[in-house]
Image 1 (cartoon, rainbow, N blue to C red):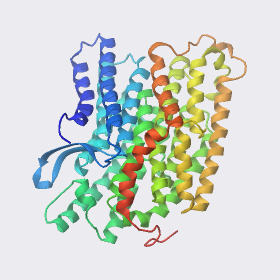
Image 2: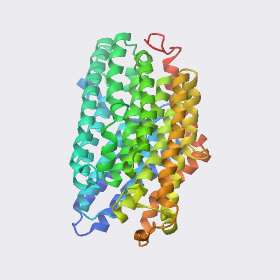
Image 3: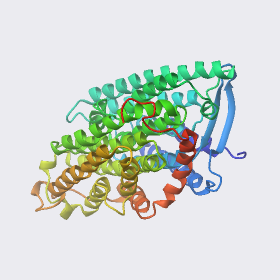
Image 4: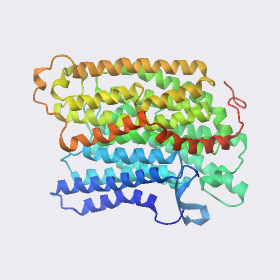
Length: 505
């Protein structure tokens, strides 16, 4: 599609904002925050425009941009979005815009904080819109540096030190990326042998019929690398500690979209390019998915720290996504993408509310509170909205994703699906118990001075809350476009039967 490079504009708006912030005098902190808000607003508005104008009748990749970069290696600056990319791009910009206002209380090295945060957003968005495997890996690596600096400079040392959290998160991400690099090089070499020339273009690679053994080998590498990013059991331990040590904005992006890179990439580069490898490894992923759902949910029951409750809850919910992907059919993968969007806005709202409460009370311990709904009704509403979405209440955005995953996976993994459904019960237990202890009952006197959400603090609640409600009441607004992207990939898989070349059904 020719014309204005809207995807590049979406990517460069935060970069331009970061540059402008660095040129602002250090004492003008409000101006730096305003620039960050405007930059993320531009990206959010344009991403919503892309979502609204995407041609549902045509489908496929649209708003395509292609500029050759390293011809000898077959690398090009190639951007484009399809039915899977668009929801992930919208999710990133919604959370990025909200996270700026959730960080309005930052007073330490404000310029550096918002500059690094804007660069982090650019890296995350880039992974969702590129159609070149090398450029994807480049954007993925861009994410690692700013997220590490933001955690060790601005994080919390309440339960684990921020240095420990930042280093643990970075090590896990880099170990996963090392496996991805091996897989990427393998695809590059094998595609060169088949084509006679090198190519990193995803559309070109998707048209190739790789040998079965090669597909199994490379998909296994991707499953480990992207699965680690998705906090797949038992490679999940970095995630809750990363949440606990990170500042609010980074926790929102980390839970909301950073993990979703793993799920998105497993679909885009795993299932699409290597369908037979996916069929072989998928049953093992389904087994590990149940570990996510059940094990992490039981851990939540024993937690008292709010960030760890939301953190392990996030790990549990990613089990649903993995189960949907492992079933390898149109319905289940549709549900997995919808679940990634729903969980993203829900988890980001949760962390925004937790961050606001912690900034004012300086504690995250559930047992320290009581009766806050009397004093902070708007904050209580935000917590309740996120909590009810988390447990899959019908009418909120998570419900349709979870339900679709269960429907799609039941015919493939009946026992696993039944076990996964039990996660909803456990989620209800720890969410309702935590919210009841914090917000209901008599107001404890030591919290009578706390102020409710006001002013810019309301932005995350309004933006993310609206996404939770609209996505729940009008799921077709997302499912119609998701179905187009997933349908193309499932059609590419063809009549392949799960377990046909596998070792376990």
